[in-house]
Image (cartoon, rainbow, N blue to C red):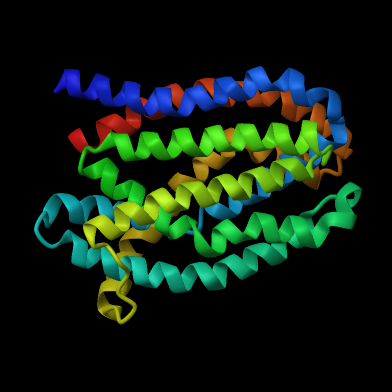
Length: 277
């Protein structure tokens, strides 16, 4: 068991760290084409996106965990109903998030406000829920390779496109938003493959009693998920609310990103240990 735990943790960790290492090595290539304002705009939007993302799953991961353990022969039927409900929820909540992001775009990026909103909101509308269910199935069935492949492909594509858009096309902060969306598409393709292979397609004619029961269990767990945002990226949001200049937020954002690189190591161990508990 310990051997499997360590091997899975290594797979999760390396798949997440290698693209980030490439991102660090790419900094000399893109930094010369960026300003503190570019970093500030990206940091502020990322903070709002991370905060809004917490409510997307409505805490259903708790229900998915318990149903997988308690009903190994029929968990898919439960998951598919939750999938159907969250698909509807993602369309409604995604539009609300796009409205909030539109208003949160800093004054320094007003010319690209609508485009930033669309690029940031598209994954919330179309990708996040599918990625959640594909990832949760691989995690609980102890299949780390699809998750590792998805992380590696998304990270690699993101780094390559970031260099291309920022260093090649001189797009500034917009390069990050384009690269992020396109890398999300790559991750979505992997998630759809997992969903299709396992027949986890959503049931849109779900049972409301199942949804009501699940919400009673899941919603109290949402604050726990929100705690990760508080630890990781809430500082940028606070700085924006306090009207700190975007350029100064950008300087802070550059330095704070390095802490995130190391936090993924502990997260990899948690991922690997979850199915074994």
